[in-house]
Image (tube, rainbow, N blue to C red; front, side, top):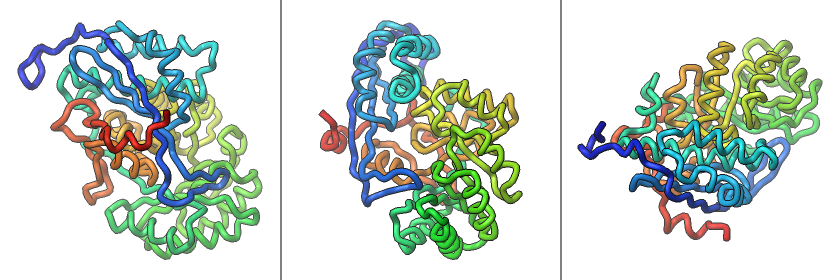
Length: 376
C-alpha cells in the first residue's frame, strides 16, 4: 500500500505521543438562549503523533476535559496501532468507567477519537471523508445563532445575512419570555427579515413546560416555523412525544444534542420523542460515537442532524446516509475560522464541502493565534 505521494503507508504505526491544550475564546457579544447566558466558549485541542505524522481533534467542552485526556486517556492509547481507532475508543471508554462516561469524560474521548481518525487518514494520505466513504459530495447547512440577548434588529440582520449568503435555513433562540409574547414577536420579525421561501427554525433549549411549549408552537406556526428544538427538556421524553403528536403538522420536533452514549439516543428513538434526532460528535465520544448514532438512525428510519462544530462534523456527515444537515453555529464558525487553517466556508449554495486536496480533517492549528487564548 502506498500514499498518493508514493511513500509507503505506515499501517503498522503506533500512537507515540498525545498532547492537549485548552482555549477559552470570548464571544463577540454577550449571548443567551432560553436557559443560559455566556460570554466565552472553551474548547480542547488534542494532537496525536504516530508514524511521523500528527493528527488533530477537538471538542467544545470545559477546560477540565484536558486533565481527563492527560490523566486517564493518553496512557491507555499509547502504543496502540493508529489504524485500530475502534480499539482505542473502547480502551478509552473503559478507562473512564469509574469516573463516569457522560459529560466531561465523553467530550475528552471525543477530542482524542477525532485526532486518531485524522491521524489515520493522514498516514494513508487521504481525506477523512474518503477514508470513511462518502455518500454525498457536501452537506446542507442551517445558520444558527439568533440569541435571545440580541436586539430585534441584530437578530434580523444575522438571520437575513445567512439567507443572503445562500443558507436558506436559519435558527433562532427563544424561551426567555415567561408569557412567550416577546418570543412570538421576535419570530415574526425574523420571518419578515428572511422572506417566505427560507426555512425558519426555533430552539427553546428546554425552557418551556409542556403546556407553554404547546401554546408557543401554535402561536408561531402561522409564521412558517418548521423546526422546534427542545421545546421542553430533552430529558422529558413524554413531553417531547406530546409535542410531536400535538404541535402543528408543519413543525418537526428535534432533540438529542446532550446525548453522550448510544443508550441515550436509543431511548429517545424508542420513545418516539423526535422527528429529527440531533447528535454532537464533540459530546457523544467522537466521530466513532457519531458513526454509531448514524447506524442507529438507519435502523430506526430517523433523519439525523449534526449539532454545531461544523469543521469536525463535515467528513462524517458526508459519509452517513441519514444525515440531513449540519448546524452552522455562529460561535463555532467564528472560532474555527480564527484558530484552524483549512476551515471551510459555504460556497453560496447553502452547503459545506470537504477539502479533497488535503488529508484527514484538512485542519491545521494556527498556533500563534490560538496561544493567546490558552488556559494555563
